[in-house]
Image: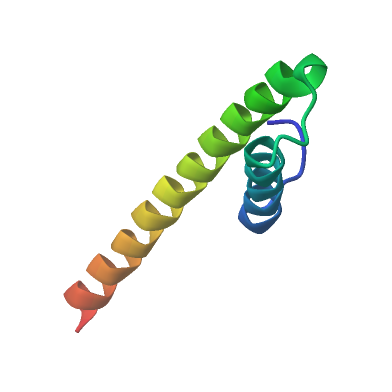
Length: 67
């Protein structure tokens, strides 16, 4: 992603998109755009979570080997 997103801002935007779709406040004309954006945000959030999990696991292993 070229944007400078954080997990929190991506999650908030994704939540808003889901809320708008659920409450039918998205017109048919922009529905595909919103779904595409949601897909991008979901991918970003999943990648961020995987990256964070990997980093935390490395730190835990380092702590265990130094302990």
